[in-house]
Image (cartoon, rainbow, N blue to C red; front, side, top):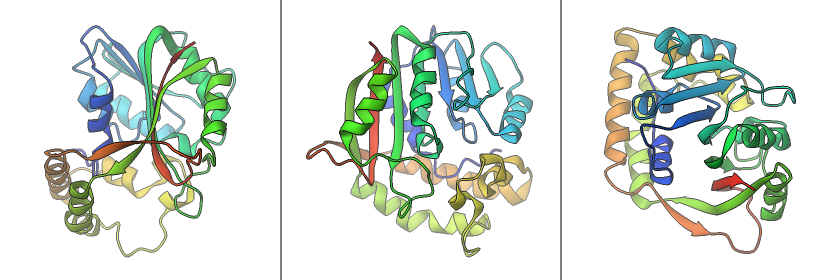
Length: 255
């Protein structure tokens, strides 16, 4: 059994996009592969890109390189990077904050989004003082400018606020499995330094098999399912133009 941690962001993706069996889907920054696990049997094709070699190798071993799920080692900051294919849906979950080239990220995004395609970007737009990312935006205007320069149109941009239910489940039930998995009490982890995913403790847990990870995985899955029984986030319209230290949901399409 794979360890995915507290997996709730993929659930919100399902509320933002109505996935269909004839769709081709691309994920930028595939993490431990939770979205691939959920979507590969629901869509025609699932492709994922990441610049973490160990992660891509692990997912290729697990899912193979069949038509329904393919994974590519690729850096979106490389202006030559491309897959030579358009997709019905392109999405990225909690990845943009780790990308040092947001302009090229959105150019890559636009290059692979079909004319009638849907684009989703969900990320914590938090400053370095609050988060472990390298990219964030102070003002809404700056984010919109980067998106529009990539020949994309902003369909919707809102803040996502955790519901009280989400906060309680995460605070009360999630600390223990983290400790059980050996991720608590170790000081600052590599994950807090903006490392490649295959250098993090989460990757090592995802890679492991057997009882040591089975029970944390079962517990994490149960807590994640419990959290999804009720709304996890509420959308709030942006006011005042400042977007720093807000979790943002960005929906885009081709101009």
